[in-house]
Length: 461
Image (cartoon, rainbow, N blue to C red; front, side):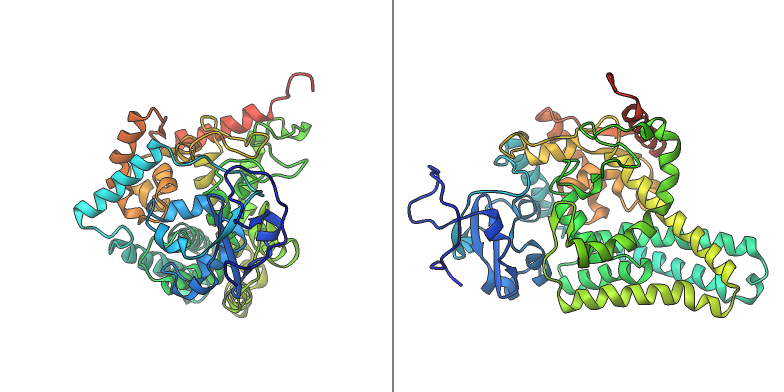
């Protein structure tokens, strides 16, 4: 497929489209989402990158995930402005004239300045933004803790008859499983650890095997959904809700009577997150084939093997094998404890960042445009906390620097404290409010207050 390909499309009278440019509507773009037929759109330009797939420095997977869609926010997150222009011109095939998700204006001076300054910092310091040796030590501690606590629960003889010790090890294992999500999984999904796509795939697969949850689904939800469209209803899967829903978290969400006093009971339900995700994975990939508004592309053999292999291994190592050594009831109790600890830690970490009283909840206008710079929106939809605490930075995977992470997800988390001052100075200069709480508990209290306020009965109801 090349520049002479004929598209099935709707022709509109748009002044910015030349008479010779093929025009493409979003429904047609969505059909070109396979290894042998791969189109992407960036800033209204459509590119046929089929022949570039195997030469893409970011690996095959990243292009296959973005295939058949407008990837503008993701592209601008992971590339320096203008860096790929010369290459992309070779693959230009036409113009996109409709969109399925919100569109952002051209990057403003704030976005360009903060990006230039941070990129300049790494260049001046001679540092590789993706490589920080400390991360491998953290991974070793996480996986070592997970394996040791698992073994201690079920196979160390002196523990077998001491339930209270087994419970302690189950709690420790649950915490370690959450750390797998916050560290190797999260780093891999943002390509922020090494420059090697194979390393990203292997680290991502640890989530499938140790947590029983899909790395591929996470990529659709987090990298293609949450990061580009943070807190935008109908585009960010992290704030997707049904009607009625057990909780009300968005100002534009319809209120129901069950939302009264939701701040008193909803946080307890976060302990079911891991179970929900594992079931939801299957529905997203094989039935709904969409995660909220983020479409799922054809699944590759690698991801099929990781998905089902991970599910099978998880059931075997967490349930079947332990049942050969301990009573079924005890295995189920220990499983539940570990799973709830993992669920609570992950849920509360993320809720304290975005689902809080102080942040923005932007909505597109009638034309699908977000009337705000993408980078400014990232800062205004995010709340940081506990910058001065090494412990909280370590046990949250540095996501207490959430705004830094959202602006520069491809930078190793170990560099967030170093570039914070650059970002905050630029925010001050451009009058972009940077939200930060002194402690995690203040941030979590803000989440509870957000739930309380949105649970109040609206006037007239």
